[in-house]
Amino acid sequence: MDTLTTLILGFISIVLINNLVLTKFLGICPFLGVSGRIDMALGMGLAVTFVMTLSGALTWLIDHMLLMPLGLEVLRYICFILVIASAVQLVEMYVRKFFPALYESFGIFLPLITTNCAILGLCLFINLWGIDNLSTAVVLSVGGGIGFSLAICIMAGIRENLRLAEVPVALRGAPITLITAGILALAFMGFAGMIKV
Amino acid sequence: MLNKIQYFFRQSWLLIVATFFYALLVVVVNSGLSSQIEANRINKLNNLMKGLITQAEVFEKVIEELEVTDSHGRAVETAVFKALDSEGKLQGFAFIASGTGFADKIELVVALDGRCEHFLGYAVLSSNETPGFGDRIKNDYYRSQFSGAPVGILKLVKTGGAGSVDEEIVAISGATVSSRSVVEIINDFTKEVKRAITREGLSI
Amino acid sequence: MPKVFLAGLWSENPVFRLLLGMCPTLAVTTGARPALTMGVSVIFVLLCSNIMVSLMRNLLRPHLRILMFALTISTFVTIVDLFLKAYQPEMSGVLGPYVPLIIVNCIIIGRAEACASRNSVFTSIVDALGMGFGFTVALVVLASVREILSHGTVFGLEILPLFKSGGWFHGWAMMAMPAGAFITLGLLLGLVNVISRHQEK
Image (tube, rainbow over all chains, first blue to last red; front, side, top):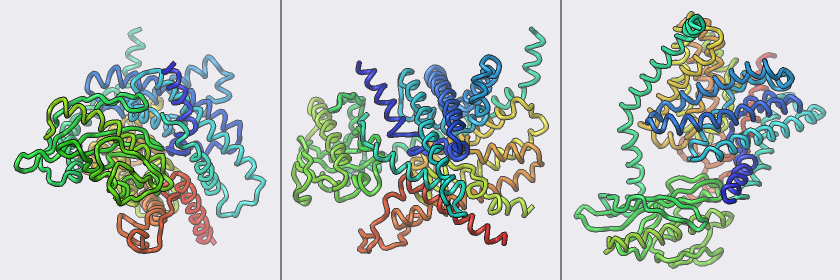
């Protein structure tokens, strides 16, 4: 029961309190680029969640089964990025072949995700926080992806409405998106201290 | 089958060669710099401890891997150092204490005097508290209340005379949670550390 | 050649015009000194990776291109990380996990793809320096604004009279937090848009 509580609290913490986009500044590039429409935002969010879960689990395994026992921690970054890049390419090939319908909805985002800081960032944070079991790592990865999807969908909803507003010429596009993100970050700050993990 | 393997190698030989070359490069750089990195880590801790126990010149680890269970039920391992001055006299003890703050983990270096009767103070090793509010646990205003406070159970109060040195600690206004975390962390750890030091018969 | 270099500084500034490398921009600009450290690290990685990719450009297979880029960049980032931990431990602590995130900084992979894999070593070097300096300048400007407004200092030197030193400035805590980062960058981008529109007239 205790483990389950820890997992649930960890999940809530990474979705709301330590939201990867709004508090840790990860995944800003797609956040600014793909949040124009809600359906695209959702597709990107799904893709990120999928890849993040896979990468989080894989990198944790490689870190604990291979790098630490052999004392090769210095090769960590190289291993992580190779794992992530290869996983993304394999997943893309697999999804395109066997699940064409799924590929339609989020497959095109997959190549972009390799350079998404959120994926590598999450793998590194899992390492930094000293997570020592696989289930917590998986829950945090899923949560990270869902937190990202949450942020990007909220942003998409706001931006769709912004199109009807009169934004000053200099601020159109990226500037007003960033200012909106700032206000969102301010709002999410309200969750801080909610859970003492 | 052999054809496939040949094809695979022809496509990826550069990748494989490059991987070996790069890995070698990184390992070489690492072995060159690792002693400096280790020295930095030890220096940082020593500098913080020296700031708290000003007379001390040498720090020796006396208790390794002391397990402390904090008030939230979590078990953390820490080590205890004793501080000796240039003549080898015991000046005090220092240890690392950690726990959850408002935003993230807080790590402190806490110093006790040689008899384990008074605190010599604490320093923040790492924290991520709200700037301007919880961040003030790093400031002298809050920290000075701990210097000379009696070792026992410190109590956090909202208002009071910050100048008087006793077991009541006045919280930082607007940062009650961070202030309380610091007091709790220090209470939890000091209890165990003092017990361990007395058990080993190390105090004066 | 100077045209390529200057493009990286202004007209194609990676942060202000191309909107690349946003993640570290927002995360490390709490102070001018971490921003400068990050900028210099990125220049180093960008330079080395551009040189290596340019040297290998004729041997790259299309499918494995991205993997090669990722491998090269992560090697140099690991080296930079080790150097920072050894010789700038304080900055290494402040920058923390954002140093390895240089690996996925869109600027570096973007330049490797767009420039280094198609051009000579010399052009790649100049491009790397231009983009790198542009990035550093953008970062330091953003960081200085945030540092002045949140702490009244720049690079640790007191600029506005701080309250604790007897002055009137209390420090605007929000500037040191994520919300302040987003808003400041948004406003700076708006400013750059205004200036460049003026130039076009």
